[in-house]
Length: 444
Image (cartoon, rainbow, N blue to C red):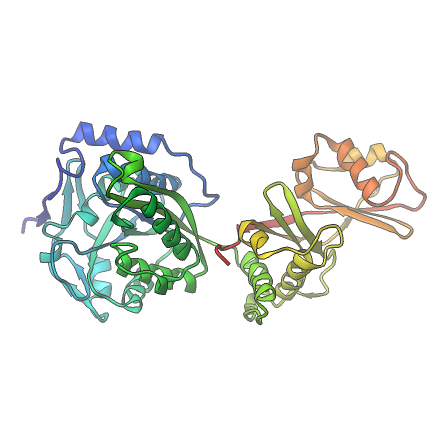
């Protein structure tokens, strides 16, 4: 039996129709992108207009996927229905989707896994002339190696129906979720920029209920992604936000385009951020996961750009790690005597860093110089205790000093000691840290 293939519907219209030009066009867009996310995403949102208008914005999302080139083996691709009236979510019957760069095989196992879910239908008609999925395939073909795709046209479907599909197909690192959506349509450029910024803020806040079809044509798959991303503790990040007036069109009536990446927030950072958010809002924080019930010691550091907002922690494991992180997060935000309590504006702009400490290891040294030789720059944290004076530097401090001598001089000053002195009875201990970092979700 010969394989059935869905032929390109908009090649030569929305994107170049010949292989060489298409490859060069996509690669050019990708080459112009600076990757701004710290970790590869689990999901992205990217626009689907003609490449001359939205290709550069879409590329900013796909550039973040490049690190997963040899990891991703399945792409779940969801986009809105423009050509057919559809209630629910339509998967195709065909075996492959064709572009000028070759055929992309449809993941039949993924299709079979969702056929029993409410709202899912197997129907080629919604796919026949649909561009919202097709235009993404060349980008996927250039940033990934071997992968299969499950293209899903999403009509009128509830957020829970879409989230159920995503939940069923979520998988691990081998699965990438792509939601296709443009933003505002045919407003004056200034109004569109304001409109799209409000939409972007709602997406970053995970508030799908605030969105409708006037905000994003892909509102139905987007709402479902936001539901599942919140359940799975993914952090949305805005990568690019422009209009067709910014890229290749006039400014009287424009279309808005946004690119977003959804990455996993380290669980300990999520605990810290939730404790701070709850304090700001006058609410109770969520219960801490049982996996962090064992004793642990941690420091929580809050920074806004280069400015320290607070740093509080413990050196010894005296309480469950999750509780320790939550307590010190609130302390860093509101009770560090060196800095004023944070504001909502600080929260929206800050980065949260959680450092989990290893047990202390005493260092047998007898001079400032021998201690300097014993330390591993960039690796060791150091605790010194001389009588009633006690101070520590986390390993992260190494990135802010030029050498070992400066590291020790500043630590001595922090303890109230004269640099390059060696008080009688001084005790020194080193430790390492496991680092976790994440930006706070915004808007508050």
